[in-house]
Image (cartoon, rainbow, N blue to C red):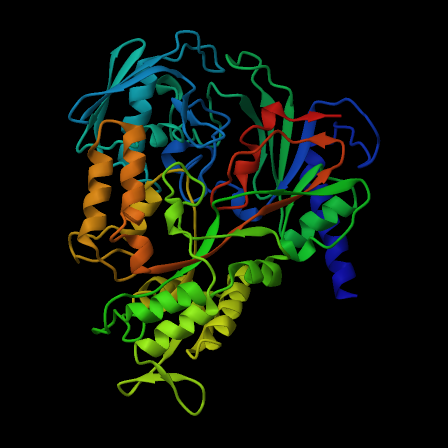
Length: 526
């Protein structure tokens, strides 16, 4: 009865959300080859931008990166996650890496009819630098317009991966920017924000003056709802595409198919690499043999089957499949090898099966965000596999208010994955004030040096090799230090109307949200 009431409520909520666009004629989910140029997409409630559609306050950037759609960007990422141009026509950098010069198109106009110039680009970046609490712009000193089509970025330090930052910052009009811009944005991108019913839906309509490829999907309605409501909306045929979880993947819905997209949306846990010292460090995981045994002793494919119904790929780093990923860091599952290195290092099983060395009992805890059922299941599965090695494990759900601090001494189940090498830097590079990495105690000066050099080079392509060496150079690297054990990359799953043709997707980043719509303008109907 409770489940039935929940599904009925979900459908009623959806109908309320769609009331603002009641003029649309909805096709039955299996209505055949109906020609139309609009689509309704169900996204999670956390996908709604709290601060609106303002790049200065996180739209397009932050934890869940995506293309801003309403605004244009200087660059874009390709299917292979390399750099191509959007507004930019040429990008160059000085030999010392401190000055980037970007030429832009001359034929771009904002949707209010005003021409987009280098002054708007400079204004955007200076505003984002001053206001953004979502992304780090400390590497930028200032942006200035040299002429109508040339903008220069003066950097505080060399930053070779600046083109990846340029791919997520939407350009805003200097003449029309103000406190309410996020609620009523003006851009030059593929879509115009036509309507926003907060807490319910967003309606986007095609920009008829867009300078790029023809926009095939003229109207895009995004409805925000939880997983249960989204599933009910699919079953009732009220949405064309809806995000879903692996727990629903065994269902069959007439007129819909289950799509799965590869991601770098990874899950893994940190292992403090230093002995306990006050509120940081861990006496068990500071032993590299323990860390290596856990890394080798986890059957990732089995975990994917158990927890994700098979929808995922094994993870070996925070950047699998990216241009800067080092394929030599892949670790083969070797349960017997894990037992051997533990025995050889003096970790001997006691009467209860738990290993002991020099009077120290091998026991650890894995914490996870209490609100995340997938991380809970992954933590539990990992715990069971680690226990089989003779290491006792407790699992506990915690709030984010204590998670960060507890991760300094315990294993924490995290989610990462971005279209930039800075993800690697942010996790592994040491901080000047502590000499340790930010999220878990770890330090390797050689790794730091490779990453510093990667940022300092003026050649983006050449920097990829340096990021790879930071992971493993044949002697040392993050992969060999095992400060983190990476478990899985979670496939992003969607129920899709069987007549909807979703354009080819590039590797999705962390977050099951707007990234699916990066190329919604190229979707079509059979």
